[in-house]
Image 1 (cartoon, one colour):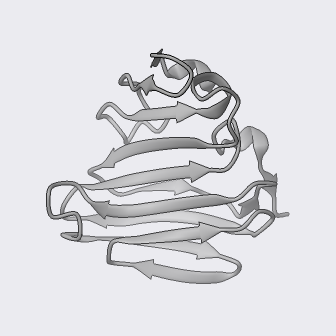
Image 2 (spheres, rainbow, N blue to C red):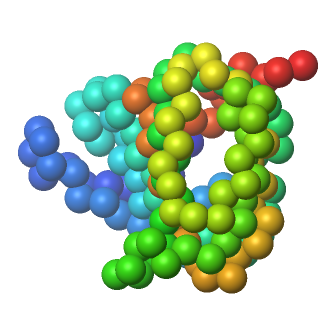
Length: 145
């Protein structure tokens, strides 16, 4: 997954973000991301941004990681709190019905998912931040049976 980003390093601490494309077919706009392993000198930090403009099931099963994760939902323009979408997201067996801009902290080894984007009236920004040198993917999750 790391090879999707063709970012440009401008020294030890600066990484120029280049457009990439999501493995979710529903995310058709270019996205950006920086991986600690490739772009940030091995830092335990990876960030990905996606523009969401249609409903879809982003995560279909409950899983956990051995690293902390932060997810952000927010409006897409200068009024970042202008959010008009609905998402159901389960964290630690509680379903959150998200209809507002928010940040969600998922401590390592916490069960989470599914993540179902049910309605998108206004496109929004979705950020996935992990304290890990590579992104949260199906390759590094423990799936609940």
